[in-house]
Image (spheres, rainbow over the protein chains, first blue to last red):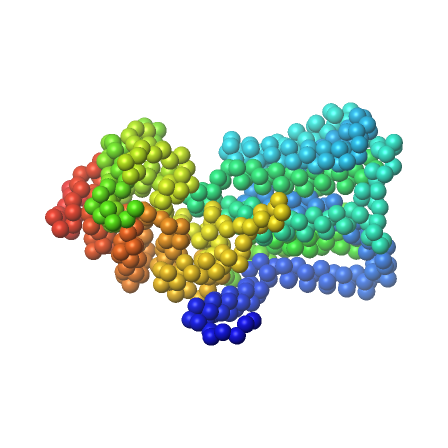
Length: 339
Length: 248
């Protein structure tokens, strides 16, 4: 800071900044920040409880197992967060993921293309599905629930047709499995890819025009249109971005299993949506964060892992997760009513 | 561009608009001069909003043309109209509630910078510029980081007007800006409109309440059942006469 007389303008700017900070401070204690803190606190509580209940829970290998289990579902959840913030929904992320892994198998195993082409091709397959979802929603005005339900079945069917209903193994390309299962300092690559994807998604959501329009569409689509925003084009872009994340998840899934499993995938979309909702993103659109979704995805997998370690039958794990989803949404409703 | 007071800035000629089999506008002629405040009045359903939606590019007319400074123009989206300097503050849907004031001011026209091939939002500059825009219309807000849903109706209009001013609007269309406002806030909006006029910006003030627009308008246009039934300077008429026209 150079020393010069403080002008009225400087004062005004300083005052603005002080006010901004005050508003920021207040906003930490309400709205989606509360939900995020609540979610994070529950994650910590769960962690402590499971650690006390079983000595095996907090072991390094188990933690890595949890991280690995979160990676694929986490990438899907991050992608669908964008769509949910626009006030839409994407039911196709699970089977689109499968479609992407099957296409990766086709490129690498059937057509003997280089691995990098297979990876990019898988991501592109996901992007294409997202693009179609967005176009159907934006141009044909079909509600996203129906459009993506259709895509869910189309992607599932195509995966089975293309693969001949059999898994495609990556036997000739052992390097392919390193994409997810290789590790840096003991941390599996899949986990690093997940964190990388989450950071990029968070930057897109908060620092780019696309991110800002994602919120604008979810909050007041008509105001966005009247502000001169090409609503249809941006909606297609956002669904395509969601598809890119599904494609990435598909490649990671294929690498982790060292095969493309065409029968897999259905049900993943609901887990992804559950993670988003637990993380405080509103299903009515206009609000949400990537960090919240990441925490939500971890809550899901810590819970599954912890209950398994405590030898609680799998059937009951599903029941517990269902209860948690309802509780998370209810907490969100209570919070809104309080505003 | 300014100083041509009295000359016609924008003219709509013989505008027709149908919605299905309903005719919303039947051959309306409408003009706005430089630095002129036009009050567009009429009962609910008279066609006021339809007329300004045609002018602001929300939908094209089925017949008729728009002439801006002597040239025929075609607006295929709100963006086209905005680029031509015609800004509209729509009823209710003017702002995005869950976003803060700064975001609303730049909604659709975000300032960005390039980091290599990546285009990022210039949050710092947008924060500074919106604070400046708000100061220019003399709007006292607790903070530009406040969410729009925390603002009063008058403050919302202020934000929308600040946004229009910032983007160098030449014609500002206000659709029912005084709806649901207190008397004090309504007067504030009228003050904004007078300030705009002083700066050479024309405005169209749409309302079904004559008392709100009469004090500020230079000229009043009355619509009824999609037709123009009066187009008079304020000096040549009175609230009583116009009211009679509107409801007769």
